Amino acid sequence: MADTKRKADIGVVGLAVMGQNLVMNMCDHGYTVAGYNRTSEKTKDLVEGPGKGMAIIPTYSIEEFIDALEKPRKVMLMVKAGEVVDKFIDSVTPHLEEGDLIIDGGNSHFPDTIRRTKALAEKGILYIGTGISGGEEGARHGPSIMPGGNPKAWPIVRNILQDISAKTRDGEPCCDWVGQDGAGHYVKMVHNGIEYGDMQLISEAYYLMKTGLGMTHEEMHEVFSEWNRGELDSYLIEITADILAYKDKDGSPLLEKILDSAGQKGTGKWTGINALEMGIPVTLIVEAVFARCLSALYDERQLAAKTLAGPSKKFEGDRKAFVEDIRQALLASKIVSYAQGFMLIREAEKEYGWDINYGGVANMWRGGCIIRSVFLGNIKEAFDRKPDLYNLMLDDYFRGVLERCQDSWRNVVAQCARMGVPAPAFSTSLAFYDGYRSSQLPANMIQAQRDYFGAHTYQRTDRPKGEFFHTNWTGKGGEVSAGTYNA
Image (cartoon, rainbow, N blue to C red; front, side):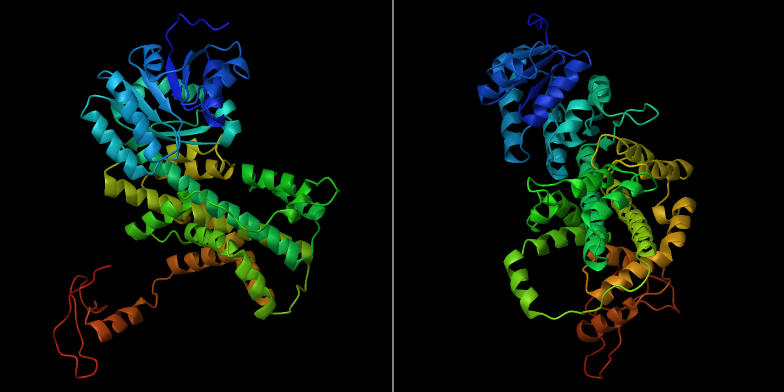
């Protein structure tokens, strides 16, 4: 039986599946944990069920919960993001003392974490907003943990969080300090955006093999299993292979009975909205969000499928060679996705005054989380070589991979267009690559148009940057400009 006379090392509020699994994970690592849930049944379910015999102190009121904690008290919230977090903070704060610590382990929006860190610091309460990735299994056996907030809080809880986190293959914890106030939840938000992109790319690869090449689920299962033994070794590739092999009760592939209308909880949207506000073109993540939105127009798509014409062209060529083209297109597109994600993090670092270790972020994502992959080891090495690297595509290793994959990548996008197979993530990643490597883009025409109809001015290539000009294009518009626009 648990020793209920001992004070708890940490307390967890919110004992749904994620909260319960984190509690048991902490107990596995030698910690005594106080548990509290608004509905007492979940607390009883834990201590009488999967947590029976563990060092768990069940509590049934906020007062009892706080009293069970060793000082400085460490309170971890595993509750729904948004208003619920604020309500629990309001309910526990009156019982806390200066130097106590609150940890928000949910998917909170980073501006909320910035606000809460500041407000609690004024009361002498330390606050951490930590992203946690890995789902139920990760919470139980080791997730990726991305803490940020009040830096004074990190030494107090570092051992616990690193002990329960996933470990890389060389034993490093997939948990380290990300940065001040909202940095941890921001990095988790971008992680989820990259997750959207990865899932969309993999889905497009599957769909292209299915509809473009007519491959069976068994054949596709073998392809993804083989890919998981190479450069694309990752959790999402692994589970895709498993999904393709799974049979329903009647022996048919279960996947084909799942409605093709994707849901989302909002973190991908947050990434896209923030990218627009920052002016950073995370085109692949945004396209992945829109692809889910398009899938949700299910009834409209059924009508359009009967009404709108498309090409009747079928694939002609070496099917095995084209499967390899798809693999290389997927690898190249993943590089673009991560490059865009880290571009956004770097811009946010400047905007919010954070100090982020990019190699450390890649290391945190190497184990436990949904986007964990061998690929992230290469990203960590890239930032180890050059910590101020702005874009992963400029690293020697990744530049070499993109050059190697380029012909296959272009062939896949072209074949999709010819066959009428939608591949928005493959297409937008290639368009971003071509745009980023272009020394000149057609934005000169856009600036001319803006000046023509709105007198918004432009800069000239034959004059120093920072000088702005307006042309009276029609002879009727006047010589007065509407004000400069500096992109």
